[in-house]
Length: 316
Image (cartoon, rainbow, N blue to C red):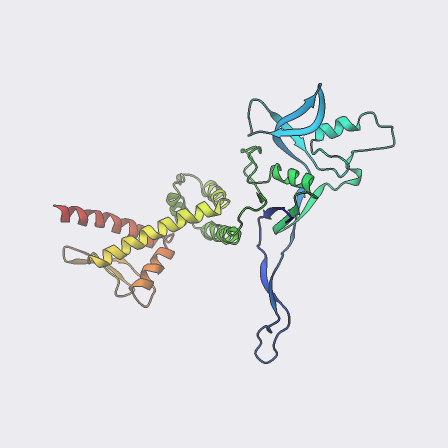
């Protein structure tokens, strides 16, 4: 029977691919018997305490230790406290306190005296056997720092890991980490550039008529949803590429040199300067990659308006 595993991915620097084996002294390349592997980077200490939302089940008015987890705020449930103890089958803190009542003084049964206050996890991927680690898995599934936990308080924006059910496809995990790093880099690069930060907020339909630190904080929240962030970012990039390509095709602009010329009614006007690239395709790529630069962004906005006027004139 094939083992079933529960996986979590802790946010941070992803595992690094390395070669395990020997190096050919002549070529400097790995020998044929070398294998590819991933080197985990760092460790994360998850608090062995959290709150979630659900129902503490009872039989004849007595706690059983079982929990029915519900979406946060469901009127049938309440806020419950969680922690994992080796000597208790339930992760309910209230049940643990209930079981501790009645034991003789000097014989603590369920205190934290012999349990860790933190759960050690690797940055990157962690796998747990669904049978052996059943209690730990339950704690991880309903921990407040798990992004996929539907019973967590949504007002708490901070998450540090994500869970995957056994057998669930995880081929996109590497892409997730890459997207996260890209999103954070984009936001951090404009942190001290007020005009560029304002443009980034505009692209994401975020209110930019506020102090820079507030805009930055909201954009970092966007970076915490890296796949969605990159989807929007790529959409904006593709939009501007199409705008430039079409404008070149119809002769509205010329990108033959580093100075982009706008051509309206036979009159030439400099639209952008210092555009790098050996050919038109490379220059289009450069402008779209630099779209947070105010000079290029506002030139693209102007070009969009000129293209609309051109299309209207053609229809007439």
